Image (cartoon, rainbow, N blue to C red; front, top):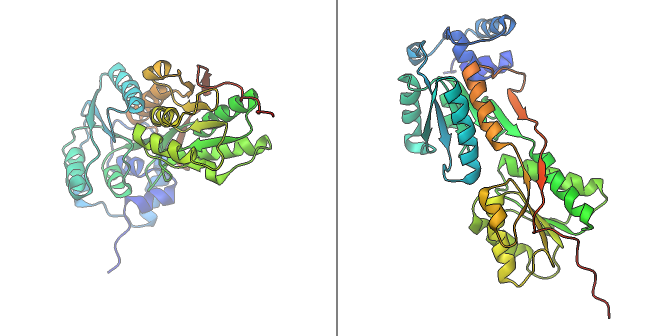
Length: 340
């Protein structure tokens, strides 16, 4: 038996997000949306003969006075900055911010249904630990925004200028005279890491520098992952004279790996990381970083949820604040070649 069209089908036809369709069709009084968009959604629903699910009738029409934020790791320094930005933006509107870890797939659907159906929050920010099915399920009940991610599974996203950040790191190293530059990534499948790698490779090619696949090593999210990735990158034969690390946390482990192998930073190897954190200035040596507006990302994400401003052809939003290079002690000109 063919399943009737759902909210995702209406959203795709209207070119808007699933959460916006849900709020329009349930008559959310707090929604601010252009009348032309409202009519486009209603036409799409009529064309598809969309019939609301019974549980959709139970969606609250009153504001809960709180936003939810699902974070993969609230202890991650990058996440902490984003969370702080979201908290301040919510507080400025008289809203609370409720934090939660990523729901496990087995019990996550029921937990999200309770969260949405009982009207505990007015919207949900999803930061890391993204699960297509769970986020799309939540978006059928209330506004959901992926933070630091592109739109996926009909759920809108907001991200940073990650490509520009990696390109700025390459520009800094190339300006110092480096031509052999490697890359230590986060998660090979992670959206932000993919964008940073794209910015890295494009910046090399723009300068006529070689992109060497053996000098591009994927890692994970922690210092141990950066340690392992740098260890692989420094294994013989040959090694770069400089490295761009996709994340400052992983870069701490990468520095330790270089130190254990007797590779002097920056004498033999220059290192620059994307993102800044309080500890970066106290590493040995202090880390050169490319700073991105993490707090602004969190604040803007919260504002978009509270304003109901998730509309758009691709439902994607960009914090286009320019990346900022903060030069410290981990980068220098390459060592001159040793001559006989």
